[in-house]
Length: 143
Length: 434
Ligand SMILES: [Zn+2]
Image (cartoon, rainbow over all chains, first blue to last red):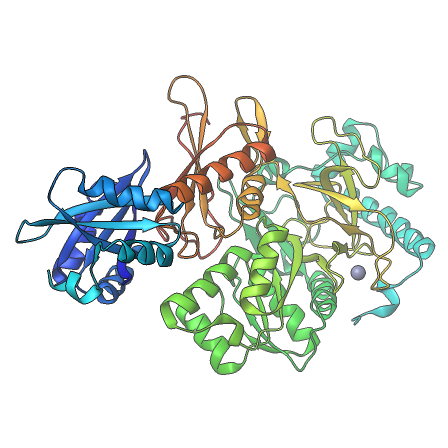
């Protein structure tokens, strides 16, 4: 149930994000979700794409530093408290969330939340026990 | 292994006698033949016969690089041009270059000291020596060439640059010994791996002689690890002879100076006072046998120390530590003197960061600021912001501990800093001072 997330190191230099994204566009890569964590002098672009390995190769060929990290993607019902509930389960199981970001799936019924924690296996166990919907990579790539 | 065991293991007493004998001779020779020396001696009322002991060398005035520039091009030559068989020159970044002329005898000395240097690494006529120092007016290429030729090794005179070709030659010819600048060695390793898919450790290299720029013990380990070779320090400068003034033996515990030809002293750079063995200061060299351009007490600007005690290799020739700085490279920031190598050392100590960096000096509000740009490697990149900021903080902390002033570290993308095929451009000074 782990899915691949592609991260890219970006210097805070004008146009670097644009350059990275155009490399992906040229390669025909679809971006499912994207977030940027930035500091005053560099940024880390994190993405869920339809083909992480091809995207990684294309970016590295053009000089970007990339990394593939495993994350989990869960479906959270579009109602108040949906995400809080998930976080509560993790908190109770003593799992730390390193970061998360969300996007809304096409039907608009649920939000897809991408999660990176300090223990992904345990996260998957806990959340499936609690009946939380976990996406596999194929589903997420085809959303 | 020795090239000239008799001289390299000569007794210290006998060596001092020989040095004194040669010193007296070269002083008289220089005084009589080079007007520059006569004038300098006369100014302080010194006569060649006043030099009676090795200790008396202290009465001889220093010779600086600026002195040599003043007499451009041939003012220091002690023989007519008809006796000069080769000319070398060090490119001056400021002002006129320094020009050195070699007699046939000088080339003989150069061959001898370079043959000793190469043999010190355990290299023999069975080896294939690739020389990736520039051939030409720069002494690196030809110096190694003469040494390898004397030893009888198979020379691959690749000269500097053309990185892809260098790696192809190493792979196809089975090069066993590489001679180049240490920063270029690292570049070669990186290029082989990233651009050509050749793992550098699969090449047949067993030894490398690296010099002509400042490098560190950490860089040595890195080069050794990547190529699977033993990396040795070579020391030399055009004003003295070129490479071959000294070289490391297989103990890798300091650079043996070929003292029967080049007499070393360490001085306090500000006052000119002679420092005892073991103290760090500027290296001063006197050529004992050179005919073309004899050099008396030349200030090398190189910062090092004489190592006390015997070397396990059996050589009695004294050793100096690896060059720790060059007064020309010294950066004065907020009144503090520092050397780029210190920053390099600090970066390398913080594990996992490739040794590619650049120091940028600015003066935004009448106060010097140092920014150190460090390339993020594939290995050090983490998608976790905290880890990356931790790396940056660790670098800043380690650099501050090493040099004593605060710097700002910026993490930059790999390969965004300019790569050099010769000497690394480590410092960019935008302060508008000069
Ligand atoms: Zn030794």
